Image (cartoon, rainbow, N blue to C red; front, side, top):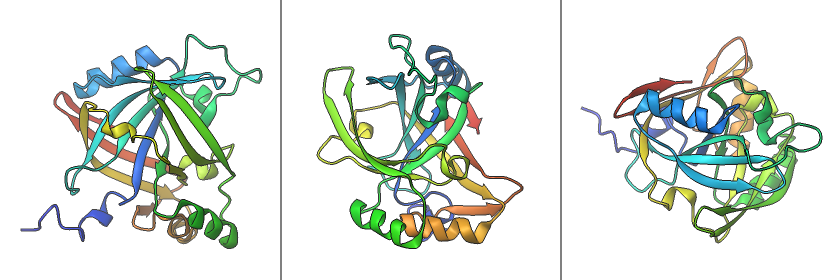
Length: 229
């Protein structure tokens, strides 16, 4: 019988440097309630993104095949009812386009963030720009990080963005409620090009399959059931 904690099994399903998945919703409270109905797990408030019009709720992910202690989570992102939307009406990560629970994109935290950015520049992988970000948690703690950002999302969100949490405590360390991440797959009409880009960015172990369009697939399980995107 295969050992699920064997590192040789992990690349078949979940990228080793997966940081988090982002699910966008048109209305935060409704989206969080729907996620709870489907999985039996209630996401907890993460914080607001001042000036960007969004807030988030978080759930830890326990990827099948990983050992304990993985810093991986699910972010439910939507309009912040206590903020005005940006003047152009657009929200980060195209969250304004969501019509329900939508697996929008994903983030990785590869070692040597700056080196990966430089390598992407050299190899012609368009990641957008590097931005400094911050938000306050519900207890007033300031989180600061940097990430790559491009709009519209590259390859409809199937190309991950890179994130570096600097000296901040990783959100997954906040004793979050948890669901299992059973599967994570990238579908693309150009498997070779997608794999080259993922290798450059530091996610070459992601599972890539051929399909008619770019899209992400994930399957999660909580005590109340499974949800599939």
